[in-house]
Picture 1 (cartoon, one colour):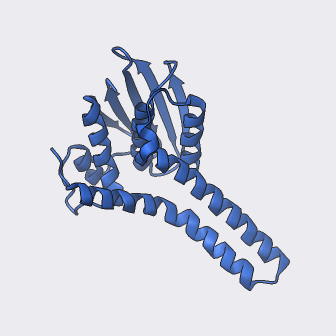
Picture 2 (cartoon, helix red, strand yellow):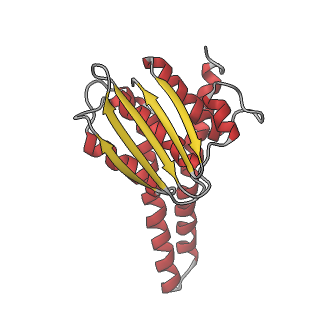
Length: 212
C-alpha cells in the first residue's frame, strides 16, 4: 500500500536530494563569487579553501545519494564493499558523527547496500550533535542479512514526524524532504519482505533491520 502517488514520491525524493546538495554547492558558488570580486591574497586563499571544502562535500554527498536513491542500488550481483563503505564514511563526514563497522558477512548485494545507506540517513537524523553510528551486519537465512544500527550521542532520538513516516503514516505537518526518506526506507524493506523496527533509550536509538 502506497501512501503517496509515484509522481509525488519522486518529487519529494528529488527535493531531498536537492536539500542535501544545496549547502555544499551553495558554499562553493559563494566562494567563486568572492574570488571574482576580491583582490586581497589572503581573502582569496580563504575563498579557495571554501571552494575546495564545498566541492568535496558536494561530491561526497552526490556519490552517496546516487547509490541510495539512484539506479546504482538496483544493480545485480555483489557490491564492492570497500567502495561502499568509503562512500558511506564520506557522507557521514559531511554531516555529524562517525561510523563504527562490525560486518560479519563476506559480501552484500547492491540492494542490501542501498538499504543500509538509507538506514544510515535515518541514524544521522537521530543525532542532535556529534555522535557514533555503530553498524552491525550478521548473516541471516540464505543470502539475507540482519542489520542493527545504533546512533549514540547527546539527545539522540527519533523525531515524532520521522517515527510517523516509519509507521507509514503521514506526519502531522505533511511530507517534506526530511520525512520522505524514512518512508522511502520502509518501501525498500517491504520490497524484499524484510522488517524494520526501532528502540529508543537515553541518548541512543537502535534501528533493527531483519531478513534483508
